[in-house]
Amino acid sequence: MQKSIPLALSGTFVLACVLVGISFSKQHVEAFVMHNNRNSYILCSSSLSSTTSPHTITNEEVDGLNGLSTYPSIPPDLEGCFTEREWEQRCSLAVSYRIAYLHDWHENIFNHITLKVDGSDSEPGGPFFLLNDFGTGFDEITASNLLKVNLDGMVIQQSIPGDRREINPGKGRVFKPGYVLHSAIHAARHDVHAVWHGHDLDASALSQTTIGILPLSQEASYVLKKGLSYHPFEGSANDESEQPRLVANLGPTNQFLLLEDHGPIVACPTIEEAFHGMYFLTRACKYQMKSFAAVGGDLSRINIPDDESKEEIMRRIDNFDEAPASAKSTANNTNNGQDKDVVMHDTSGLMFAYARRSAEKVFGKDQIYR
Image 1 (tube, rainbow, N blue to C red):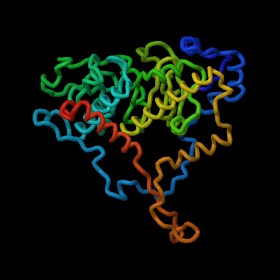
Image 2 (cartoon, rainbow, N blue to C red):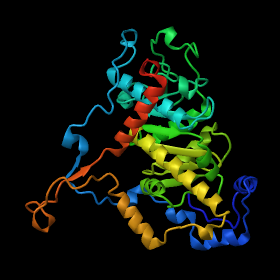
Image 3 (cartoon, rainbow, N blue to C red):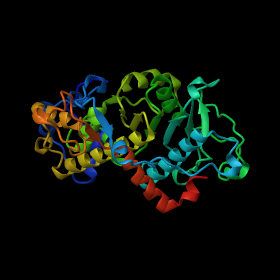
Image 4 (cartoon, rainbow, N blue to C red):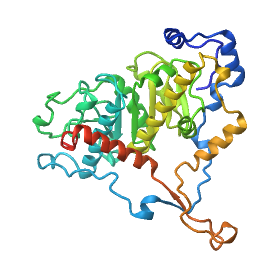
């Protein structure tokens, strides 16, 4: 969504700044407006060309690294309930909720992370996606107490033993705002399998301003390069008529949508990329909120990159995952007329694997993958 910045910050943000001793002057805001419009940093990822060599190989292919997404086998009492692939997805989503809990990306029993069930597009009534049972905290999510629902928000019944659902006995509860937001994206974006939404305090606070996310850090630049857009606040997301507008504002390729006066949505092909995106987005918002506070709200004292610097910043994001050269090139940097191989780290997979190990240490594998 494109719109101009008015000469006043949102009332909520100003009030928050007043509470911590920050004051805004008209000159502060005008300095920002003259310096940059937030929409100059809204980038559609489809318009950005990658400079990565076509001869790209991942670090897994180079050194045999694997096991980043290996999970325990299906327990005997659940073998008839899920396919092996769905069980793996349930495990990855369950640990994602535990990770989100540790990062404080949750709000009591609210917020959602969803994962589209692989192969469900071709199933009768599909596609289906997995989400949390309303009333269950993020620290209580397990692989078997996740709900499987269709795009209408109806729970798909599975023969899960009753003792696996000790918190919410019965078929489970679907929170309508979660269904409205997530089903809209899963239905419209076939490239998206994971949708991560939370109410991180700094990201939600920043969503209440007219400034938006600025390229003030590596993390913010990553978010902007992957595609960021904004969606105006319409009230609680429990009205299905909002879905077309939300999808239109997300766009066909963007991975980030900041719901104004609400919070962030990250929509990615994999759960690992969605975690990576949410981690960088929330860090970017924390940095930006702290930097605003550090200069007393005077945006003329913030190091906002100019257009030339911005282009170089975005160019370098193309090579964010690139490892040091592992193949010696011949003269003129060519290998028999071919581009040299470029080794790309699976940064999203590595980040998620570390976050997963941390969650497993805190909660115990047997409490998550059950």
